[in-house]
Image 1 (cartoon, one colour):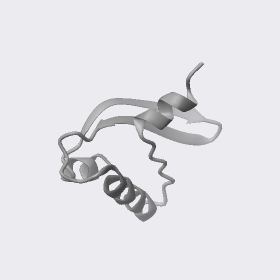
Image 2 (cartoon, helix red, strand yellow):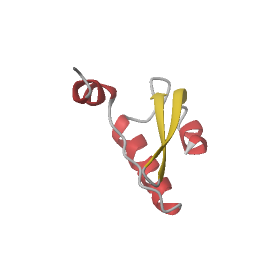
Image 3 (cartoon, helix red, strand yellow):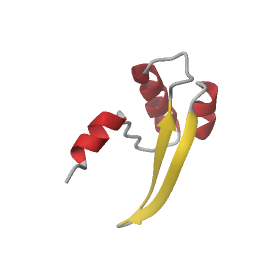
Image 4 (cartoon, one colour):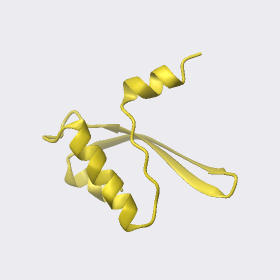
Length: 71
């Protein structure tokens, strides 16, 4: 995933890992402002990359994430 992000000129800002039940999960906070590609294009590439490794990839825009996790 990080190689794909590098190819699209995106920067990983933060990363967290956790075991949820029996699943290993990784959450990445990514800055796409230097990329020449738009959010939807990057999202699709990450999902396709995940499928190649039999991974489920969920990509959310920061605004949606913040709204969902607001208290």
